[in-house]
Amino acid sequence: MNVSELLKHSNFKPKFAEKIKPSYKDQNINSSELTNSNCLILLFGILVFMLVILGMKTIISHYWDSLSKLSRFIIAFIPFFIAQTLCGYAIFRKKDNVIWRECVGVFIFLAFGSAILMISKIYNFYNDLGDSVILCAFAILPFVYILKSSVTSLIYLLLIIPIFFYSSSLPVLSSLSNELNFSIFLLAILPYYYYLYRKKSDNIFLLIFNWVVSIYLVIFTFLLMNSDSRIYIISSLSLYSIFTYIGDTPYFKNNSIAYNSYKIIGGVNILIFACFLSFQNVLDSVFIEKLKSFESILFSELFFTILFSSIFLILLFREFLMKKIQNINCLYYLSLAIICFILFGLSNSILLVCINVVLFVYSIIKVIDGFIKNNILRMNLGLTIVAVLASLRLIDYDIEFNIKGLCFVGLGLIVLGANYYLIEKIRYNE
Amino acid sequence: MNKKILIRFSFVFAVLFQLLLLFSFIYDKEDIINNGSEFKFMITKFKPSNLDGRNYICLNLKEEFISDEKIQIFDNLFVSIKENSDGFASITSISKERPVDTSDYVKAISFHSRYGTTNYMLPFNIFYFKEVYADEIKSIYKKCIKDSSKKVYALVSIKNGKGLLKDLFIDDVSIMDMIEK
Image 1 (cartoon, each protein chain N blue to C red):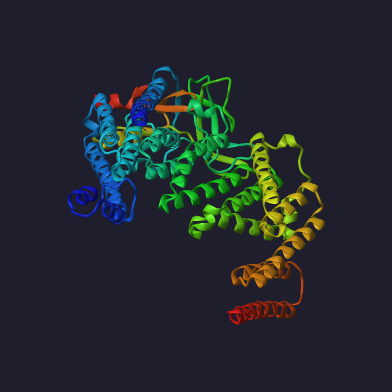
Image 2 (image 1 turned 30 degrees about the horizontal axis):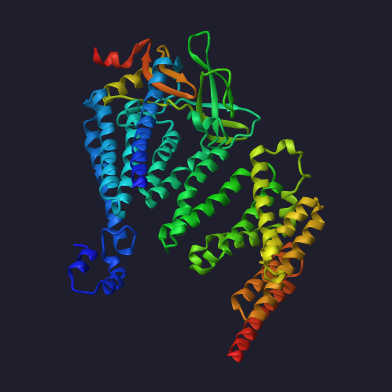
């Protein structure tokens, strides 16, 4: 008997019954939302399906040699049909039960994958594993939307990885380049991501999606832009600035920081990039020659660079219109400045000075901001960047060791003093 | 109600779509066997570890080529194949781009690359058989591969980048026929 029936038969007033109903929802196994209590059951369900599939395979493989070709085909299709029947049952009868939907989604993936692998086994043909994985991704994509299954969508996200590395011989995929295929496959799952986001639940899958999608995009730009380092730096800095913008939207700001993968990845990566580029050696090795002619740059690289940077510029323009200048995140200025320096084609020595100055100014702004707003974290971030910059420059140039040592001691004392001063100030204000 | 019907219809279409994918996968393999062009690959190299498999022999179809093109490990290579005057297959060219004018090529993956030399493995490298015949097949294979007077070759069917190993021959006699006699 579920909660609503229980309340109907009890002698509570309807209004009161309606009030206490949500607090019983967690214990209801048949609920349509994924909660902590039925997450465990979901895990067991997936485990059971995996064990069932593995057990069937073990039994079959023992008798494999003595089977004829037709019976092998029939065996390959059996788990597939069982999975589809269960899926039909879940859709027609158990539509509101989340565990049914999630488990069936996983079972469909396992059944389809095993069918493909067994067909490969029938022909003793193993050298297109990449194709099989991509076929699996194709096959489970509709079920992500039909079953609204989050676990299946995560499996899909894992399965699309080989598209990037493997030049597939599937007729649909071989006509386009790998990067475009990958981005089309990633775009296909984004409506589901939007659906999760719209539900506004503090869902664990939303957290995983945030991290996975942002990391995919970072790796995507890294792998794509390999013909010219300038193009790579421009596109990835724009991408990270877009990430920072997404992380600053009210939805992410009001949620826990663990959900805000965009802000963490964007901010940290911009700073790491800036620190790397402030090295003489890195600059010399990265920008050996002037920007090559546009013919040597691939079309897809140029396309994505222009896409990312134009989105970044539009967002920055929007920020200028909406906010006061002192409220805009300084990271945008930092990345915009570096992009501009690279586009102007400055020589390496001037570029080095410019990037160092910009980074130093950024950290000083952070320190002052932290002092004014009594924010220890922000001040320490600024101080850390100053410390990192100073130590990088000390490594770069030949200075005597005792002077280097004294500089490090001085840096430590400054950080300690600033923190002590700020804590005293906060205490005094209270 | 309307949404419910939509979901049910899309379920039916999704199932049909999956079936279509599976059957296209099968059709692909049948197409290679029936319509692919057949080549004979001579087997010359042998290592004792090639016989370690429970129900297969590793044929050691490792090849090596030297080129100026920058090839990294795990790059996809397209190997064009032609029949030479002896009736055996020989490799004509290797590139990272898919050949357009011919369908007689296979896709291979480089597994070692150094100083402009790249090693790659042809994709039909393993010959499977029933486990019952394992000992006999292995002993015959071992004896014949060391005997330089006998020709050991693999019959491979190739179409559009995929190659399927059909049979193993020793002096124009199938190894399975030799066992069954």
